[in-house]
Amino acid sequence: MQKEFNCPVEATLSIIGGKYKAIILWHLLDATLRFSELRRLIPSATPKMLTQQLRDLEHEGIISRKVYPVVPPKTEYTITSYGESMRGILVEMCSWGKEYMSNNDSDESDNKETV
Amino acid sequence: MQKEFNCPVEATLSIIGGKYKAIILWHLLDATLRFSELRRLIPSATPKMLTQQLRDLEHEGIISRKVYPVVPPKTEYTITSYGESMRGILVEMCSWGKEYMSNNDSDESDNKETV
DNA sequence: CCGTATCCAACAGGATACTG
DNA sequence: CAGTATCCTGTTGGATACGG
Image (cartoon, helix red, strand yellow):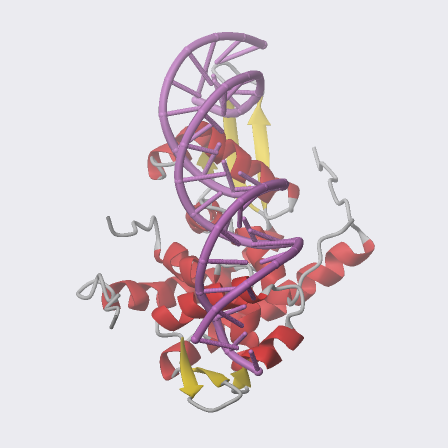
């Protein structure tokens, strides 16, 4: 039972649609990071969530996980070249999102129900 | 309680992250469509879901809803100029998604640990 | 034709505590 | 340090029926 997508856009969303996947990718675009570093960069994500999202991305081949068998443990997350191919999307989404946020900044509650 | 986004990308995802929002937008990019037409184009979406997603998009100013007070009822959905600004994102996501789908097409389970 | 109303199932996500 | 394990909650999405 493979995933059925109405359109390719949904396929893309299935990759970066997770709660922290976009920001994880965003951070990894320009740096290799350790688990604890990602935790510090994304404080609102619990370890469980972070692990989960990282595993998903890893399984999709978007990022790679390198474990160093040392003590204390050390794990590094790096974006793959495949993941790199998402840079354009991320950049586009980021710039649009910035505009969106600055718009809704001064107009937070625009739900003027004309009941 | 306003939405907090870790990064602008998440703001964008909050707009098109819904189950049918991407495909709705995709269809509306090049055509004004009626409710029943959207239903036919997206058969898997129940009327409730379609309405919900359309309302969300409308509330965000991405699409506009024009009701004709005639009988039988007639409603048209059109993308706004603001929504038009998402075209680039949609196009990028679509082309990436296409690649993704053709990759996973012949290789469903690609868990090749390159340890 | 264009929706709403209800109710329900599934899953994503969160809190907290613990381990190699 | 880098995770797991459990349990729990809330949101999202789905089925079905009905209304203007």
